[in-house]
Image (cartoon, rainbow, N blue to C red):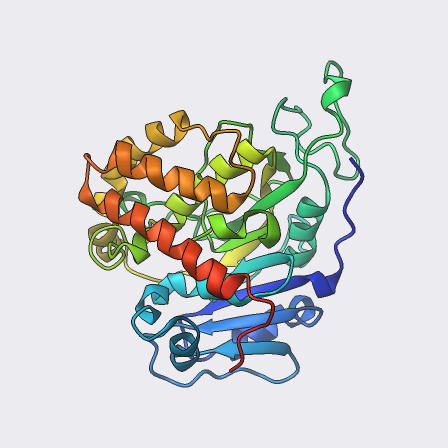
Length: 353
């Protein structure tokens, strides 16, 4: 499989704005962001006007824009961290990079500023190897290759559809870990990228990811938020759920997922105890959710991400609905998301503002 040449004009960077003053954030990212079109989605719950410095190619969406595109009854679905999903919905580019507004560029172990966008694009532009693990990690990176014993029949790899970056400083610890170890920070910069093996799962965070929107866009959704659970019991868990859904889709469609580089530097924000109250039910439900996703299989008739989501929603309702009624609502919300995607995400024009 030949490498894909991804051009800058094929990429949107989506930024969920949870704070009003983006001046420092945008200026720190300026060397990276200046090359791309940006989609900034203002959290509908944020009352203050956004402060954005000049010099960027961007579209900004506020609550009134969200109301106009999806209807006022659905704008609450994109509140908080879930506002990033609205950006996925209205983008018309093949590739999306998603970076939260509490992250700034990291520096590598030599002190050089990390171009997270370029590294995400490199991950997506080179094949993934989900069917046989290479002990030198990503064999397509400079200076690496396939190791002795790696089957030649698998060296062409598969298309990489999802790149999951990491972050320094405040790593993606859960609330119990943050509460018990409030001073714990991630200072380890590991210069590595690896393919997540087929049928293996990982906790995906939407804070620093990139993906092929055309291939798997419909499988990245705020299902738990759409189900009405976001503000009730499972807040902060919607991207975990979405990550497991999209991994099932990638495995079934023969697509790859990479994790590792690029890093961003995540600033401290939030209260661990309050977060624990919001996500504890979701933490417990993971013990039911993970075995479900490990066992679920798609029929061969499902040949697109949309068809896979329909099949998965059916199985969620049948197998998890009896565990918790929230899963039944999540399954219904997955179908509602597909309706939104078809009406908005797949239209030929970009919704005007």
